[in-house]
Amino acid sequence: MTEFRIRNSESRSQEPGAGRKTNGKRPGYLAFVLGLLATGYWLLATAVGPAYGLDPRHNAPISCDNCHVSHSSLGSGMTNAKENATLCLSCHTSTGMAGKKPFVDNMKATPGVLGISHAWDVPVVNVARGTSYPTNPELFLRLDPILKGRAVETSVDKKSVKNLALEVQKADSEIVDKVIQFYAFAVLAGGAASGGSASSVSDSSKSWAVNDYVKYYVRMSSGANKGKARAIASNTGDTLALLEPFSSAVAAGDGYELLGPSYANSGVIRKVTARTKTEIEGDPRVTITAIEFEEFPETPKAGEKFAIMGSDAKFGCSVCHNQHLQKSEPWTSTGPYVEYRNNPNDDPAIAANNAKASNNRKFLRIDTDRSQLCLECHNARATSTAMNTRVWHTGEKKSHPIWKVFANDAAKGLVPDVTTPAQFNSAPLEPDKTAQTGTDKRYGSNSSSDANLTNNLVLDPDGRIACLSCHGMHYTDSKGSTEDKP
Image (cartoon, rainbow, N blue to C red; front, top):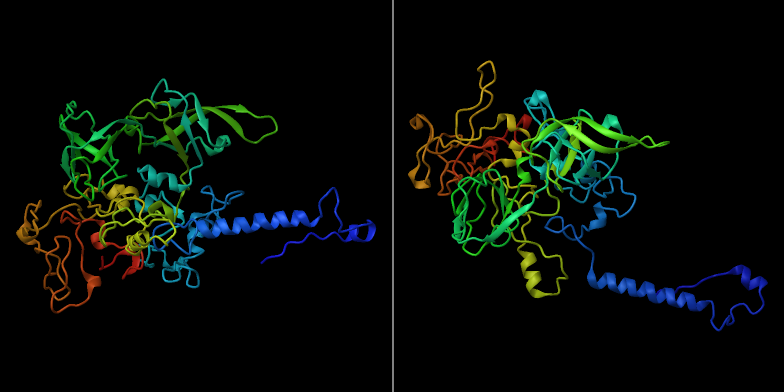
């Protein structure tokens, strides 16, 4: 047992009766109390256990304090490192805890020149590469905003917030000419679905005005899609059609919530044009009392949150990756998500569940089974529907068309949406010109003459060509982040 003692050499030599009772208690009494407290703390910590990062492989032995610090943190996420990439690379090195997935600077891709991984710790706005700010707030906020705040009251117009609360006050030069994005949502209403599909939510008890909720969000509060939200493409009196499908079909009884009206501004990016300030004597900062900006689609509402970002905002690992959860759908699925339960494993049911917890779903910030992550920043190369590829002002093609079914394959349920499907193969070919085999409509297995899985091209869940059909993110086969593997 640990022994706690308090030593006082001066009292022993100078005070008579040292070590005897003083005021009815010995000096050793304090040591005894401290010993009990320390022992109790140790027992409590041992019984409860540390809080882990959660989903494998960021669970035990990785705990919160491996990455986070409670006070005097270096990063805005209360982290041990100021830069997001620095924090991740403290483990993702050849000799680190995540040595099986190391990242070093010479892996960063310069397209067509060198590199085997998407670049990190670089500015997200790159005119030469056609990249810009992501419109999804989940990604935008991970760029480490200069400033965050909220509107205290509803604005008088679409170009300003007159009464606001800021998390941090900044100098004038750090705000004007930067960009602002609103990202708050309000729960308008909710209910229980009477049915639906992966692409729709129905509620027979409703009588909505047609298309009244276009571009709003529906978020599932229970059922197989719990916690996931999708933009609404259109609606009838009792059915919401989704812009992107859920990973599972909506079932009768699944709870849902309608989010808005701030969605009309959410994801829209505008430049800050001016601000009203109050000088603080002897302080280099200013108190900002109003912000003006280019016009938004609607007047900012009370409670709406916003973030202001500079053009030098850097693209870190956590923009794309959620280091705590594996819930979002990856490009190639490894099966349904199984949540890791952060509880003592002496419960057989919990231990059995955790043995099956998902550990190979890439820790993605949002669903990417349709290349959604790519199109957040590379949105200049996207097409909103299955149309011909967009072109530059010179008429030259900007990119290969995506979201198109190129061939007729009844066995896989694919119907082409190109004008001349006969010129395309019914499935991607192996290097020996034989078709990839298998019944999965996304991608086949292998032909008898080719046992290599890394050169199989993958289609999205609807059998369409998408970004990740041809491109990879990390550890690619060829230079410049193009690859021939899923």
